[in-house]
Length: 115
Image 1 (spheres, rainbow, N blue to C red):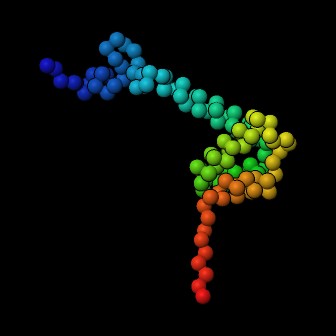
Image 2: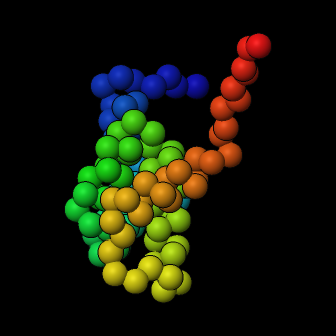
Image 3: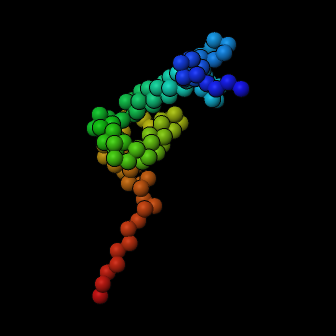
């Protein structure tokens, strides 16, 4: 039995015995996945630019920094509405606020009034 030699390229995972470069574990090319994500992100941005005013886009970007999960939920909702043809023109900042309020509605605060 031979032990791996740190001076050989196989030890560091740079190449295989057949001379090919290592692939990712799922069989897809490593760059293919990031390229796909970039393409989807670019398509999302393009749709959002078409359906949101600059103020509304700015608000959504600010939300993305603080609450990325909420931002993703709103983006998916808006893109779904746009692809179904339910959004005509651009949504204003006030309309986006209403959508945000309706999405966050289930989280209610209970007030206890002391007598």
